[in-house]
Image 1 (cartoon, one colour):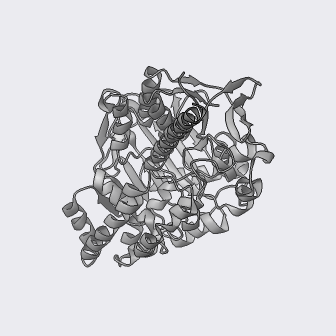
Image 2: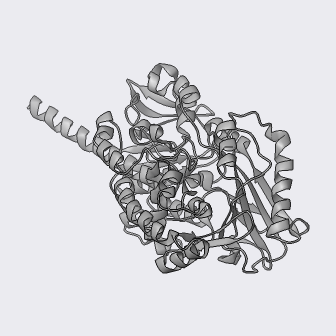
Length: 510
């Protein structure tokens, strides 16, 4: 009989694991508490607008291609990727812009418009980040760190690659202009990290973008979710929506299934959690089955979590394709270090902000009704470890952001809005079950990376695995897809190991 795998949650980590395992012949079932799949990639559909709830930037597209290829399919037959050019348009606080894409000569010209002497520095920056990318992504991203010795073996590489430095300080070695330093060090914010705290290993994200490009899925990220769902169902995987899990069943240190909120029990040979790691250990596994490493104390007191997000999804009854904005826009405030300190350390809601403005209808008009424009604007904010009451803070914060956009980028914005939806840290806590309302789970600092991060296979419960942002290697689509490959590899290895043990047992009896 096929081995049965139950997956809790249908974010990209869960979908990637489900597709990989179903393609290998496993019997796969996914249980999702919301009414449709996607996790943070949930789609909000309002009055003819489609708003991608979470990830909008696709990098390392081959990782999706690999999933479909495992099943003998072509990703292109399920969903279309189109390249974004520029990758990002980055504005300083005065509205002056900097574009970059995959063309080195174009980037050099853009840098020279800000600081000619930094062109050579950028070339050296790229040359060194190639080595970081090779080690951190190509060699280690899809390898589990289950033993302290896995960590010890890479210490010489970490020292050689200056991983003790932060991303900002690493970039600052090569770039002198402060705005350009920000442009080449903001990437940790895409995975929940502070550029002034996150290990320089994450400087590889810029190199990864240069290596494989930045893409958009036609129909939105939700179309990519649906492509994976279709593939999984073609491989006989099954989805259960509006179905919450209340407990992971454990017998003799082994995960044997789940209990649903209504008391129904489903048995399995393996359980994968795509739910938040802290939530899984604290709420789905009884304390007697957990060691100190996975105790409530660890996840409540010893773990640092990423920032949260305040996101406004809005649609307008007019088009704004004036040439000023690109598909992906980053608007950096005048304060940078101070703002990030307020978000990550002081955990206070500042009067100023830096924003990511997504404008998908520039590439894909199908995301809005004819003649309309779809947007989302995202502002990093503190997680719920601070003293912000979002039931009262959300409305004035929303108004300040929209007024800023109207004054500087989108004329007459507020009188043209015809659809709107907002999420804040309470959404991440209450709907997505994320500890502290963090948007990216465990913060990606050096002491919470690789072996120090929650492991892909539980130390306490056999046949329990983790995928998603909170486990190794971390947040972002390449990260969570890597975690799904790790889970697949570990489950297949466990089957091979048990097969060998059974064969040895039979030989002994003979």
